[in-house]
Image 1 (cartoon, rainbow, N blue to C red):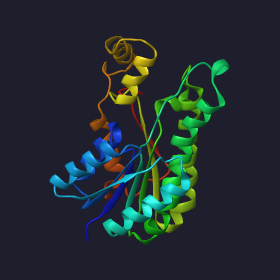
Image 2: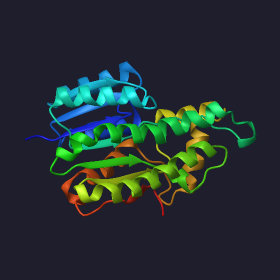
Image 3: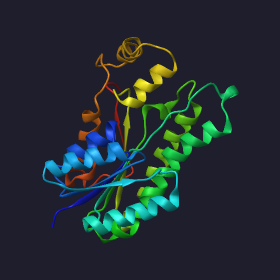
Length: 247
């Protein structure tokens, strides 16, 4: 029986790269994204790769709507074995000028969105012989100036990962996290544009800080996610793997 995965934030960036990577080992993939176009394009690409794929359009901060979307995808795909929460956003600025809406918008997508997707998926993950969850943290969990909401959300993801690993481990469900560094995605390019910094300068500064002397690609994060949902990591849970080009 082929395995089924759901990836939130699957329409772009790390989420889309993860969908493509998982196509090699999963027979069904649900692509969740807030925007219909990207979700459907990735799902269509997966179908061309021979995977049963369905798009789910929902804002992951809307807990009730997430539950309905997950239920529909599970019904269409015939089960669920792995969940990857990769939806993300940034709405930064110095703390003194940060609005409550900006603070909440980032925590709602990253932290509440991860909670919502995992909670909605639990009934089916419990039926899987090897249920696995991967949440998306970040090197920003160690601290990031000008983006306190993002850093706090990502630190919360690491705490959520450890807590869920303890809670769900007795049921055979593993929960791990991947923590990317500076990755070339639309979100990081938008960040540079908002700060009115050229992409070359922005990416170059990040590359200078990495031990490997370059920024990362979404596919390099996706390969680690693939490992974490595979049997190769069957005795790992509650862990956060940093994919940052350095220590």
